[in-house]
Image (tube, rainbow, N blue to C red; front, side, top):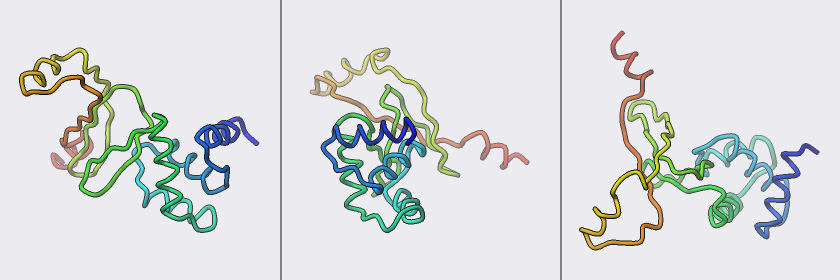
Length: 144
């Protein structure tokens, strides 16, 4: 057993989840494929392991999110993706091809507290910022 597999098993135990091949494969896939969705996880795990239920995927991802190990994000209606980068950042999503780029972003460098306070809010608990723009590759293909 590799060190990574042991780390995943320990993570599952710490989250109070039974260690199963399905859950190990779910966690392994999430960390190998940042911004993946439950349908993508299911498609992969069904190829590698016997059938994995959506409830197992959602329960496992939910426990990872509750523990702050991953962050659920949504760039499109009705699709939750799992972000493994828990450092402050924003997302730029290409509206042509769907490519997602993470850009480091420190909310403390900007005066959002004043802006929110002026609009009746305080105590920022978190943020989720994403922009939609055309990536370099898609921009190049249009110019050709």
